[in-house]
Every structure is written in C-alpha cells, then in structure tokens.
Length: 453
Ligand code: ATP
Image 1 (cartoon, protein in one colour):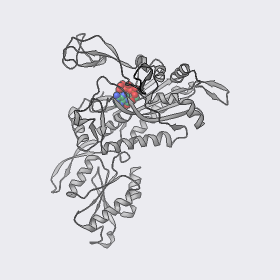
Image 2 (cartoon, rainbow, N blue to C red):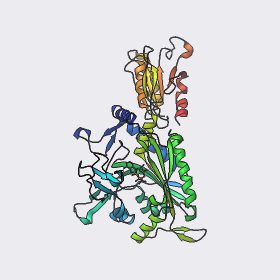
Image 3 (cartoon, protein in one colour):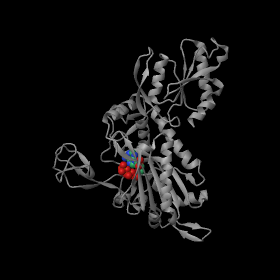
Image 4 (cartoon, helix red, strand yellow):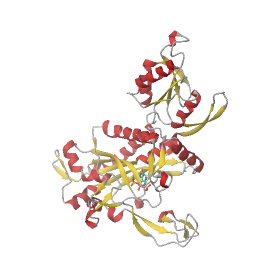
C-alpha cells in the first residue's frame, strides 16, 4: 500500500525550498516558465553533494567503471538509431471544454466513459502522438539538414562512444561507463514541483557484460542502488521495487525494475534499473556501419556486449531527500517556552552546510576572532558557515531549518575566562538531538570529518 498523498506537507516543503534558497521557479520575475527550475545557494550544494557521492561510489571506488561527459546537442542519426525520433512520444489528448492538454493515461474513467481529470468534460480530442524531444538547429541554416536534438537521456552518448572508451580504458567485460548530465524532455504535464521537469539531470551507468551475465547483473545493480539510497538517508521502508510487467517493458528489455519512493504526493519512480540486452549497441552498429563488437582474447570470440542500466534522476532524488528530511518537532525557545521547530534531518554526508560556527556575542571581539579562527581551521575540510547575528537560539533554528547537522559555539569558557582547563574548547551541538558536548578546538576537524563521512 502506498501512503496517502499529503498536499499540506508538500506545500510546506515547496515554500521552505523557496524561502531558504533551495529551489526557485525559473524566470520567476517574468512569470516563470513551466517545468523549469533554478537551484539556489543551498539547493546547488545539496545537488552537488548527491552527484559527488554517486560519482564516488560508482566510479572512484570501483575498478570496473570509468566516467565520461558527452555533449547535450545530439546528431539526429544517434536518436534515429536509438528509436527516439520515431518512438519517444506520449499519446496526447485535449479537453475541448477546459482546453487542458492531457496525457492519454491521465484521463479518468467513470462508468466506462473517459473524462477530463480537471473539469470532468467528456468532449475530448482523439489521441495524437507528441514527440518529447526538443529540436534545434546547428549552424546558420535553419532547415532539415541542420536539425539536432537536445538529448532526452545521457545514455546514448555512452553507447556511441563505447568503442573509444573501451580502447582508451583497456577494460575487460564486465565494465561500465558512467555519466552525470542534463537531459531534456518536453513533458506534456510537468507537475509535482521538480518531480516531472522539462530540463533535469540524470546519473546513468551503462554496465556492459556478456549475454549470460545480464540477468544476474540486473539483480546485483538493483541491490547496489538500494544500498546507495540507504547511505544517503532514504530508509528502505520508503522505497519500493516494482518489477515492470512484460507488457509495459521496452520490447528489447529482458527485465526492468523501477525503484519508487513514497513522496508526499504518492509513490513515484526515482530510478529505473533495466537489462537492455544488446539492443542499443546493435542499433548503432547497424546504423553507423561501424563495428561496436568486443573481442574476447581468451575465447577469441567477437560479439556485441549486453548492458544493464541503472538510470537515476538527480532532481527527483534531491526532491526525495528534502521530502524525507523535512520534519517538525517541539523545542524550547529563548525563554524556555516550547515552540514548533522546522528541521531538515539530512544525512550529514549530503547536508548543504556541514557545520555552522557562532560567537556567543557579536560585540565581543575576542569571541568573534576566535570563531573566525575556527572557520579557517574547518574550511579546508568542509563547507562551513559563520553567523553572528541574533540570539544564539535563533541562529540554531536557522541552521536546523536548512539541515546543518553541527553547530559550534565559542563562549567565555573558550577564552578560559571561567576555568583555565576549558580554554580552547567549544560546544558542539547536534541538530537532531540538540545535545551539546564540549570538545577541544584541535579535535574538531577529525570529529566532524568522522561524523560526516
Ligand atoms: P517517468 O515514467 O516518470 O516519465 P521514465 O520511466 O520515462 O520516467 P526514464 O526514461 O527511465 O524515466 O529515465 C530515468 C530517470 O530519469 C527516471 O527514473 C527519473 O529519475 C529521471 N527522469 C525522467 N524523466 C524526468 C523528468 N521529466 N523530470 C525529472 N526527472 C526525470
């Protein structure tokens, strides 16, 4: 059972994202452009931490995966061979009553009659195919010969560069090529905040193998990807693996899993893990006339490798991280009265800011200079934030609201004014428990590094 949609929670999350600078509507001052979003100062940090962690575990920590970064503008022949020019489309229907443009699968059916989900209208157009790719022209001539597409997925540049990457990396099967980058789809109905956007980023791995290894590797990558989500703070109880039924799977795929997450607006796909057989490489081999075969030196066999593809959305994962982290609890204010605290409980590994540093009072030079010294000590190790304005309780709250896991306060003990034994120690506050411990400044980098890793 998926959890019921929680519209109120989602509204609070969208509002927090704007208020604290995670995500803004694109071109907002001109009224916005539907399905496009800009990441603010904190959103960009969160996104970068997610991508860096994916790259670390997918590429750097493995011997069998290398990376690449392909161009966004794509030769039409690539997307003709992959089937996107012909088939990357959604059947679309218009409601003549309220003029809504709808995907055919979004209509509601009452007593066997299809209706518009917005107005209940039954006066609908016949379905027509709508290609989701953005088309542009390369060079001065804007005619058929200059058409190029903004890539609808990062995967195709990996397939097209398979031979080059194989030669330079000298890898043996099984091995993978990873890529993180932008993809574009002219979605008919962008919705649910950033969940369905027209411009988004993907983290894709094409893991090439022998045909007989495909099914086993599909299971392996599904498990690896589930571990990944646990390691960034998305609990397994909120994730669901859907085995895509035969009739809904791409015809060339021998097995596909969708990894879904319980968003406040319902259970939805975060990532697809698909065994795509040798379809993509074979298509490009046929269309280009260039061999994309692999030569096995041991068996002296030549064949087109098969591939397993875990394909995750950066923006959808960022949204899941924010939804998962958002919580409200009760905490005492300056006068000890309980108030509602908004806190983003990000895993320290992906939190935008790792540690905030505060002097207890901003008008006491010795506290301020000590706090700034600590900022300099921590800066080479992590992203830190210095804040001296307002009461200390308010400063903690501001950091709780953006998910900073640790807060360091420089007080009079730090200066050794009350007890010489406490000189050069600070309080270290934990965002979730709100507990404070006293630690030596010189131990701070190691303690924090350990808790963030
Ligand atoms: P959906 O069924 O939700 O449209 P899809 O099955 O078409 O997604 P894939 O083609 O498998 O998606 O793309 C892989 C991943 O890319 C998805 O799991 C998702 O995380 C991300 N993605 C795809 N389309 C979008 C989009 N319009 N906005 C944001 N992320 C997207």
